[in-house]
Image (cartoon, rainbow, N blue to C red; front, side):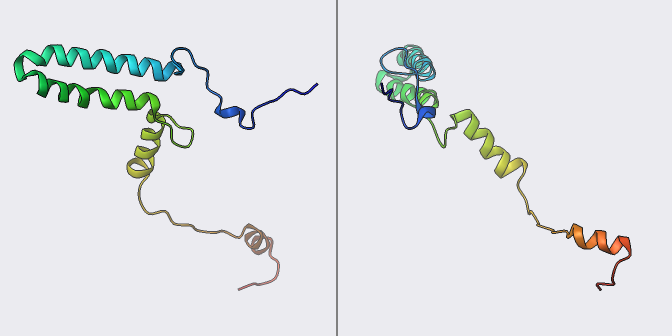
Length: 114
């Protein structure tokens, strides 16, 4: 008897509805709700065509958050890693090596290496 296991088990994603994961479905539902709210709220004030463009621009980042995946990171993880590496921990990093063996021998009173 042979059981087939996918080569990359870590990339398996559980789907709940329409072939979407829970994260993708939730973000898509929130994006649709936001788009409908923006369209109905701004439609009478700025016109239906302009409101449709505004609702697309408002819903796109939320929909993107559900489907974004970079090196196994979600959008929030990627944004935090980017902010941490480019802003919080940015700056010059110098490598200073230490020869612990040499320091121990020097402290022990061994040969004069200088």
